[in-house]
Image 1 (cartoon, rainbow, N blue to C red):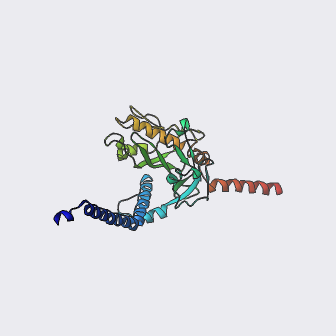
Image 2 (image 1 turned 120 degrees about the vertical axis):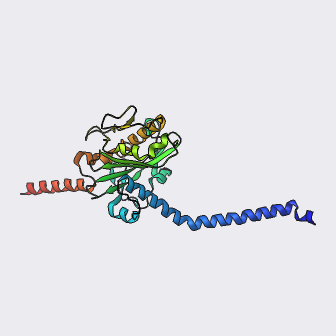
Image 3 (image 1 turned 180 degrees about the vertical axis):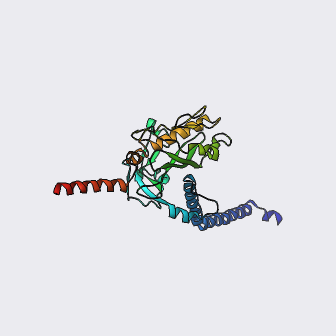
Length: 278
């Protein structure tokens, strides 16, 4: 009798039933917690954006501060123009890059960041006045030593001066490349210049060994040559012609961007027409 209760058939039946029950529990929990997970991811994203803009304070209401101080806008990377083609509050450029209909393939010298595919649109975050922002926060990503690094770069309203940088996702070696998380190293970026001049078309900001001596240089990470190279490549990519250079050019050339620049052009045209009419 005891041997019958321990038969292979009964053991397999119990094991299958146990697996089925466990899978149902896990699936139910995943569905039930999905909305909370998405909310936490959204909160983490907004916290990182506020942090790179030097607006985050422990204990603050992230949602309230983000709504008060930051305005998301979607930019078409090729033209550098704002677009209403997608909703900035829900659009995810990283996910869009995986969709061939919303992205393009990159290779060779066009892909110094090693991302393989690039989205057509990207969300930027404007701090202060939308027409003349104090800061422009750009999403950045690229390959480090062990995998993809994702973060944000904050540029002041002049379209050139760097306010801060942060990486919220990476797999770099702790104590070496992992120092991209070190506040002391991130502080070295403040006040650095992305471009040599207002009319420059290519960024020159780079990590250098032996001590940065130029406005476009940042101290490299000690003992992490490949990670430092990866940071240089990804920053230069997203500040270059393949990235946000066409968008930032409007700020560097006139000190104003987007709608404000267009409004100034329209006002000038209206004044000219009025003068000719007189």
